[in-house]
Image (cartoon, rainbow, N blue to C red; front, top):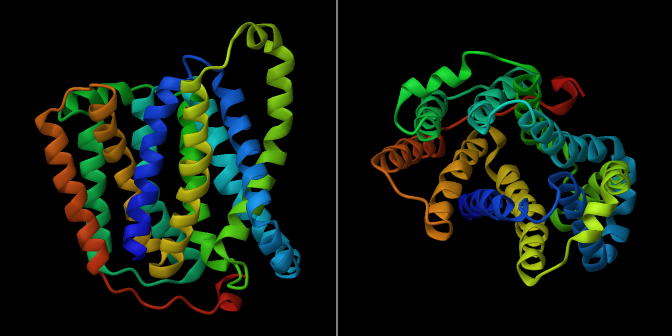
Amino acid sequence: MPYLCLILAACFWGGNYVIGHILVESIDPILLSAARWLLTAALLMALYHRQVAAQWPAMKKSMGTVVFLALCGQVLFPITLYIGLQYTSSLNAAIYLSTTPALVLIINKIFFKESIAPQSIWGVILSSTGVAYLILQGDFTHADALASLNRGDLWTMGSAVSWALYCAFLRIKPKEIKGNAFVAVSATIGAIALLPVLLFTFSEKAPALASGHLHYGLLAGVAYLVIFPSWLSYLLWNKGILAIGSTRGEIYSHLIPLSGGLLSIAFLNAPIYPFHLVSALLIACGIALCSMARHGQAVPRQQAGR
């Protein structure tokens, strides 16, 4: 069951690339990102306000942890990625983001003294190779795009670090705080943090926004972003990570570019090439290695720097 949760979460996030690619033709990307979390927060608080109220004492006691995780997962990750993509290519950004499983291994080793099984190390290497092969389209001469680094590269590296921190430190979330309430509060914190960005963007581009128009495709796309990548993906991902650990679970993030590619083929009529099949095989083998690995127990939290 945890593995199915992680697979579904990654596939929903993969669909985010396809839907986002379509929506940015009709709506400003910054406005779309901020509005997405505002709508998600409103929906989840309406659905789970009783659970949030019941678990609020535990959340209040661990508010620092909840805010830290929300800032890493719902605020810093998308903001740094978007800023970075203004200055660097999506090729560079995707390669940097594919390093998150390796970063999680390092964070777990440093902060939680977790012993890492050799299978996980080889699984991360194999799966990362598959992601790189997919991004480079089976031609390593595409690596020339990485020749010159700029501030956009640094921002996208920061997005990889923020997501790795979210996944690695998810273990410190108190068990008393359940999934739906946690995602609802995290979305609310993310929405509050992004509200100034939304207001600034609206004030700067109000005439252009007013001249636009809503249509069913736009509304359906925003609904997908709210329900699947913003709600269900985080809920399922958190359940999977808490069940099997971030070291073994984070490798499933490599399914995001793969599922995004497959959905692009299905819905955007993108052509399929042999490198898609090779990448899928490498990623699947890497995930299988990590899934079979046995890891040592982390030391108690008090000894792990808390």
